[in-house]
Image (cartoon, rainbow, N blue to C red; front, side, top):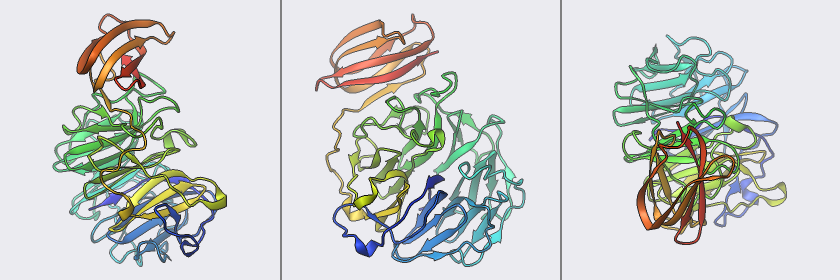
Length: 430
């Protein structure tokens, strides 16, 4: 299975793995590097590929040893990378062109016919590569498609806004999905020839409520599609969203994730959170919230934030990839960490036991459907803190709010659950 993770800023000093005991916790990898760097990580089988701003490293043994495979990729950074069963792809930062290797980076060939310069790596924290069989999709300033392992490319951006920046791509069956920085999620059912928006249920853009949320990560697990949205610290309406109908409708998937948001913090919209999938498990890393794993397609999440950080301070997680046996996490200022997949047990009770609350659509033109566990009371408040709607739910699990008589704007829905827990979710009335 192809696994792709995008760009993040990381730096730090890494201690040798042999100096740390692996005891149901994350431990520092054997890969050493320092300074402020942009980084990508990807994997396939037991192979792991990691880049910093000007170098690319490869491990064939789950991170025990690493070799430098940067020769031939230029000297001005490395953009998105992709590892599939037979090829390794990397975008050179100085040109934005795609390079391909069939020998794990020993040699590289440029495969960029039809790609404008810097169309993919506009800067080192924008762009995406994803593959399915011989078909490749590359995103940056538009989306490009190759049917021959990158030998030639054609632009396929019909239906996308001309200024859309592509943050992530994923292929699911016959559909392709694109995450954008300002326009939400787009879906193509014809190999990228045309694109339509699929944003129902996603929150609005934190910086401009007239736009959809900034979506910076996508993945699939079975029939479920996952999107990572970004907002602002303390706003619980952002984070992980899940769709079971090919993106037509999205629901908040936050049971067990606590109050952390996807993509907030040190780098704001470029401080991304990523997903990784192996078997029936999906992993998510939250920028300041650590690592979470779900064994039930995102219905609940378990916290795996035990770190052997020693005197260096707790890491801030940025990205994750998984091999056949190991999970690797990129952190800010603390380098690359790893943990055996055997530590991630299915069915572990999440550290946060908050009940899932699913709301759709959001933004809404009036009616809002709510699904939650035993809701006893809810109130809708405007930005002045004034109650505009209050309703007793008599421990219902599914009900509908009618905001059609309220003026357009931002509201906050406060839901009291049967457990006594109060959840606050931002609503946007269009």
